[in-house]
Length: 522
Image (cartoon, rainbow, N blue to C red; front, side):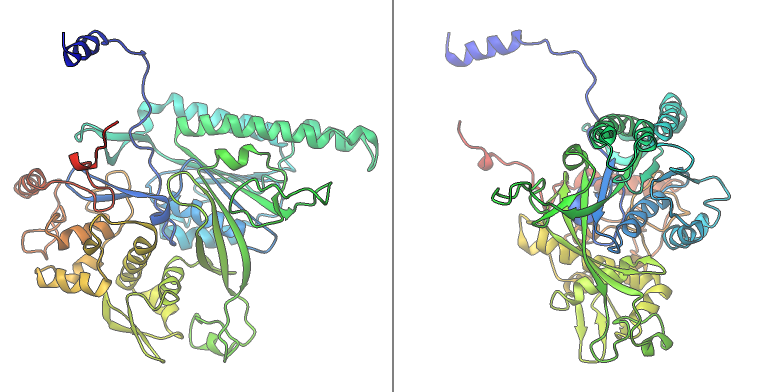
């Protein structure tokens, strides 16, 4: 018997396996923008050939920093933006520092979710409690009941995502997402530790074990919450404080818990599990007012009156370092522009990112800017912030430009010619007959029922790159490349789209299909 025949004989007898259910083919991440989706995500194809970016925030997210570095504000932006992507959700906050102000949070919520978040507190969507009401262990027992109830009602709350399973036909399902946060995890205190505090004066030996006991409780919490949250579709956000690591032996070499944690920094009171159970961990550094060198007012004033407000500290730039990222690269810098009043400014952050990268995707002179994807609108340092607030198409143009800029830095395209400049992208698509105004009046984030005609049409940056190559036609766009069509009701249009999907080979520009030439002999 030949070696090949022997191998075949053995293989055919190896027809048994371990009997268990496998994990989901894709673990959904929720798009949040503000330069975070590209570094944390990758594109996957939907049923109509659309490219869906599975990036943003997942199950467990940590945001750390020293005081006044906007870690809570950035955490709120990520949480509220993720929550806004879905028609229905619940948010639960445990305030260990006992300083949350609802009017402030309502402003941040409306900035993220618009009109539907105006009643986020009065409508019961968001509930907040703190350490004056419950110790951490009591709060968590109550929150566990919520997660267990949600999971027990899985059939009621399960939904189809637009992500396809490995068979390319069925949809990945996910429970309607809910959200929880602990601000801060550093001050997370259980009842037994509180009792030690009450029963021992400062300096008494009876209090010596409190930090050890609190550390054990935090380890148990992190181990338990990750499993429960993953099972019931909950995203958990933790903030923590940064302090200085002072070694007992000054001659000892410093030990870094995370590769890109700033030298000498220590995340206080979180235990080592924080460093390897978080899917995304961000350090906020070097927050400082972003002021114009000449006027001493904000570099990007809110309006004309704001331009004369010398010494104004509302607009800040925060250097955020990605310390941990289980779905992409770590160590990279994401600069965020943050208003003390309005929170994270996602589109202005994207604009500043492109501007400081050799004015990527822009035409500019000393006085004004023009986005190559939206050339008819002229911008200046003094007007860009206000125009961003007023013009949705401008926001889309800036977001696509920032996506392309990040792809240039973070991703390797198999064929470099597939990643083109914003100017080339627009020119080629217009030459192909597409109505550019229609393409800008779209959204890039996924949600349940992604084809809902009540939402803006779905179109990602990768979709645009593939359209330029003739590899995709938006499922919501008619053959004239101008008219929006409801694919849910127009059977003839759906049949035409599905016919094109079958003809086109869906191969990622970034992660191409494995060819025979790629295989090596072992």
